[in-house]
Image (cartoon, rainbow, N blue to C red; front, side, top):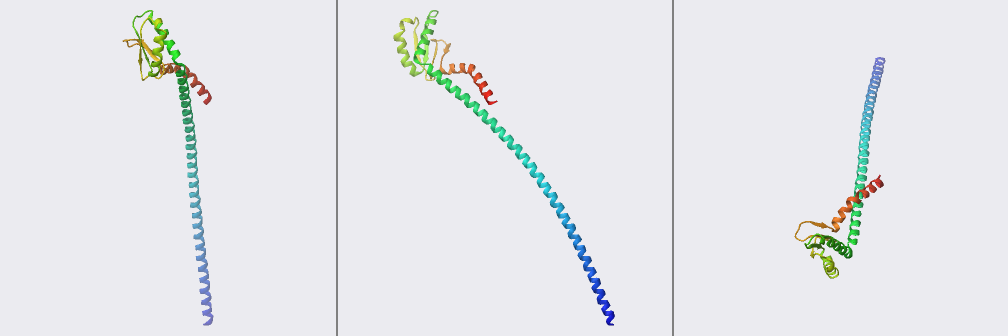
Length: 202
């Protein structure tokens, strides 16, 4: 009886060990499969993240390059415009400096002498209020005998330097204001300045 009991216990132990071993192997196998699956998914996700990061980096680089290129273009355009504005300002200052009372007086006298040969009408001269005060008295006192036709002087607050001159009562007149002279000179000089700027800018 004791032998049978021992045999039974031995069999139970043996069967238990085998079952435990089988279960352990099954658990190990499942764990291995789970591990392989997790590693595979992690690799796939990592590849996706790396790919997306690469695309984002490429787009960012492209956008950055475009932004820099646009900024350079904008800066060049602003610089060109500032140079043109500076040129216009300097040119205007030089014109205004040249249009002094002596030059304006000689210009009026020359036109009056030329016009008086063919026309009996009075001339209408429009000047800035500042220039009118000095020039009217100067011309009428110094050159009245040389002027075959009369001259009427008029102050025009819209004139900074220079003058309008024409026949009194008629719409036609010559424009020798600083603004008119500036526009004429700009037509001739600006293309030259622009060409220099373009060459320097490359």
